[in-house]
Image 1 (cartoon, rainbow, N blue to C red):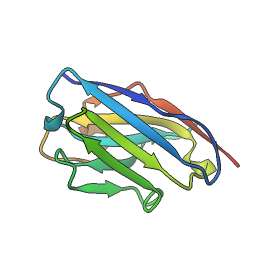
Image 2 (image 1 turned 90 degrees about the vertical axis):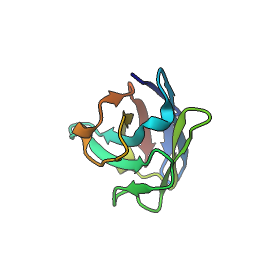
Image 3 (image 1 turned 45 degrees about the vertical axis):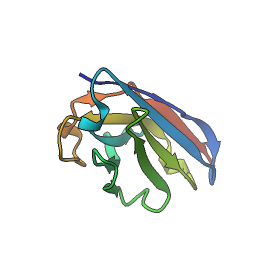
Length: 124
């Protein structure tokens, strides 16, 4: 079983950038497809980005496409989310998620391993 710990959240002004990191431990990281999800106040958790086990295939929600970049370093057991040109609507708790599968997914219920979340607040 893999354990996931996120870091890198914080308060930033609109137009700014943040980089979230998620460190995995407890299992072979390269066996896990990874994703980032977020939950804004009063809203359901939503898909942000996903990444294949090798890192050569990525996909993004339309709301973040062109602004966010997901990447991984399997030698460091880390998946990252670079967030640029942040908007107030990006304010949410961001969660790293992993599934032990050759298939990555945009679906929340497909992931069985979750971090504790990190708060991102974007002020206008």
